[in-house]
Image (cartoon, rainbow, N blue to C red; front, side, top):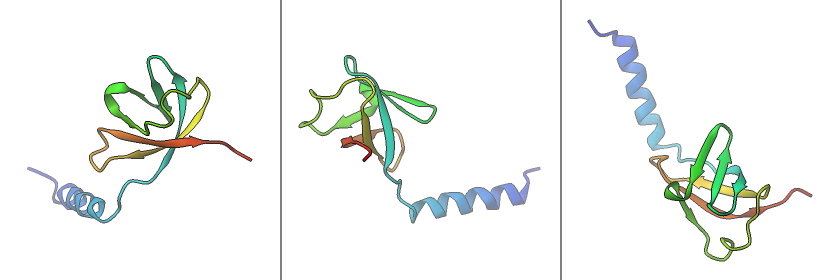
Length: 85
C-alpha cells in the first residue's frame, strides 16, 4: 500500500516547482577543450550546454561562469564569464 503522505509530498513538490523557476548558478570551467563545467558536484560536458557565442573561445580552466539551468534541468545555458572583486 502506498504511503498517502509520500504521495501528497510528491504532488506538492511538482506543483511548487512550476512557480519557482531555476536560479542562476556559478560554475567553474574544468576544461576548455573539450568544454567541461563543474557546478557543485555536477559535471557538465558539451552535450549538456548551450553557451553564449561571444565567450566560447575565451574560456580557460579555472574561469567562473554564470549558468542558468533550463526548466527540466537537463540542459544548461552558460550566460557569461564572472569575476569576483
